[in-house]
Image 1 (tube, rainbow, N blue to C red):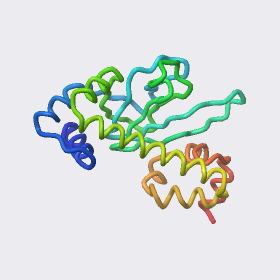
Image 2: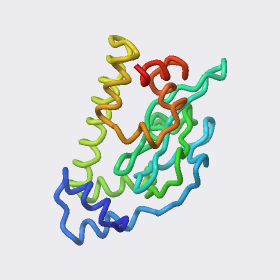
Image 3: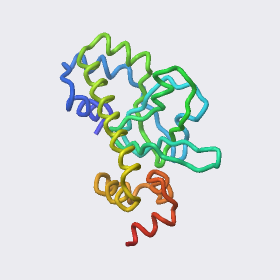
Image 4: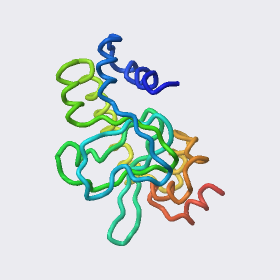
Length: 190
């Protein structure tokens, strides 16, 4: 399926755009290809874009002072990724985004997103809806980290996103769950 059609189907689940409106909307996206391991956003950089995943898997992460990695998000096809704090505030990135696999994305600048939102009410509706869903997902994840043991978090992740098991290295799943690679090994072997 072509990039335009993938994005069109994604948007259509939430917002109703005419063909002309969608063509205008799509014209602001820039296709980009990245290789496995390639950085899209690095900590300390200025961030002016967000990325819609067409193919591949991205990860949003940070590495603390003890060099321990924490993964905030795996972004699979039809997901969005960026350092949203940096994007919205104009500050430098506090997290990084890179590619777990080769990836094809559509890049939309913050300035273009704002322009489109002011021009097309349904685009503004879509981005508001998406932001709200992202907030709810982050809230659920935080509650799960605070209230659930590692086994429950692992089972929950594999139930929601079984494709991660075969596509994402286990040490990255462990970093997402906040456990060691050894603990994860015990969980998926039990």
